Length: 74
Image 1: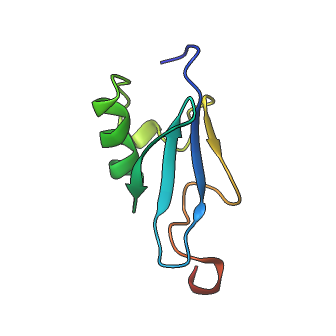
Image 2: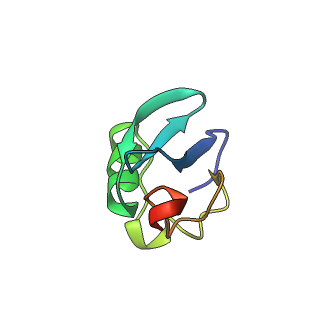
Image 3: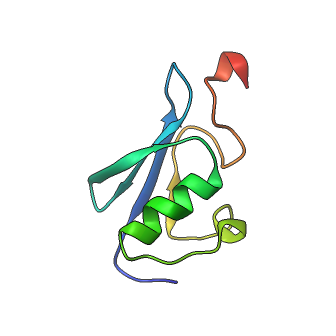
């Protein structure tokens, strides 16, 4: 999938999980790649959870797709 939609996964929150936005709209708090894929599906953007980490149109802020907890717990 490619296109004008800009997906941003913010750094882990202090309580764990990462906020997911599409074009500035908050979709929810993800705790893993499957959560990100589900939020995107609900927004009409289909992606296989296995492709989340390598999708060039997803902007991973602060840390990569393998980190879901605060840095002190990662």
